[in-house]
Image (cartoon, rainbow, N blue to C red; front, top):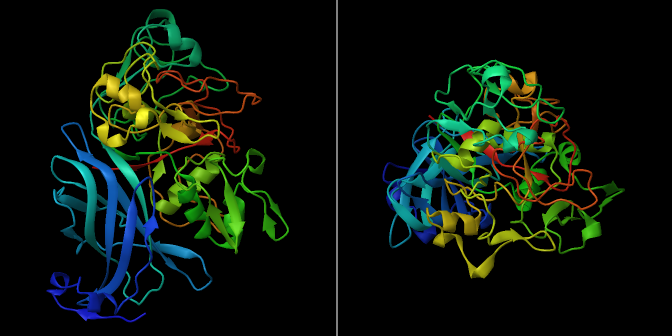
Length: 485
C-alpha cells in the first residue's frame, strides 16, 4: 500500500483517476438490503489518516415523521488475521459529493465514542442515495485492509410511549396495562420521560402484566436508566441478514467464529447451515476455502442465539433493543388500537409482505419499498411500522431485553465497544447474559416446534418476552439499536 500526504485542498481533486491509483481500494461490498460501499481509499491529510468511500442505498427518505440512514463502522486486520475496531476521530468528516440528480443534502455525524458514524438525509427527500464521504480515523500509524461495514437504520424520534392494548383481551398474552383497583385492568400505561422510574406491580397506578415463567416476574421498579423508547434512538431497518452475520464470522479469529457459528462442524469441513432444508433455504451458509459464504446474503438470519446477537452488537458498536423500544418503534405516536399489528391495523387482510415456502421474504403484487407512504393501507401492504421499520412481525421472532427479570431491568443501554472476548462472547458490562431477555414480534417457525404459535402477533402481546433461554432456534433473529441524543 502506498501512502500520500495531502494538503488542505486535497478533497477538491481526490477523484482524479491517477490519484486514486496511488492508494488501495477495497472491492464493492453489499452490506445490507441495498446498502453498498464501493471504494475505501486511504490517504493522509496533514498527518491525519482518512478514508474516502462511495456509499449508496435505495429507498432513502426524510419526511415530517423521521428519516433513515446508514451506520458505518470500520475494522482493520490484525497480525494474527482477525480484525480489530478502527475508531473514528472527532472531526474532519464530511460528505464530499452526492452523485445523484436530486441530492439529499446528506449529514454525517460521528458517535460520541467514535465507534462509527451515521449518514442520513439532511432535508426532505425520497429516493436513492449515492455519495462519496470522507471519514477520519484515530489511527496514526499506517494500517492495512481497512474494511467498511454498514447497516441501514431508521431514526425513532423522542416522545411518549404508550404501552398495552385497549381492553383486557390481550392480558392472557402478558400485555402491559395500568393497574387499577385490585390489580384489575385500568387502561393503557404511558411513558412520558426517559429518566423516570416506573413502579411495577398490582398496586393502583403501577405498570403491570400477568406474571408467568415466560412473561416475567411482575416485579419492579424499572430503573430510570433503563431505555424506555422515550428518548430518540436509531434501530436497524431490517433484521440482521445472513450476509451480515457471515461477514461478522469471517472477521473473527477461528476460535471466536467457531463459538459464534451455528453451523455444525465435522473435521475440516462444515456442513451447510440447515442443510436439511436444501440450498434454497434462506439460512443456507457454506464453508468454502476457509471462509463462510452466504448463498442468500440479504435474507433474514434465523437460528441466532441470544449471545450470538449480543456478540454482533458489541462488535458493531451497537446494543440490543429493549421490549419498550420495540413498542415505540411499532406504534410511534399513533393511538393504540385493540389487537393492532405494527402496521397500525388489527387485520392482515391487506398484507402483501411475507415468506414463501423456502422462508424468503417477498413483496407481493410486484411492489417495491419506494411506494410506501403513511396511509394505513400502504403500511399494511408492506408490513411496515409507523416509522417505516420493516418486519417487526411476520419474519422472525426478535430478541429483546425484558423488564420481567432483575438482570433485564438492570440494563442501562451501554453500547458495544467493538471488541469481543477471546471466546467470541460480548464483554460489555451491564448487558443481561443469562437472564432478562426474550422475544417480541413473531415469525417463521417449524410446525413440529414446541412453540406452536402464530406467525403474526399484535404489538401488545408478549407471550415470550422473558423466556430467559438463549438457545439458537430456526425462527430466532433480531435487530440492534444505537441511542442518539
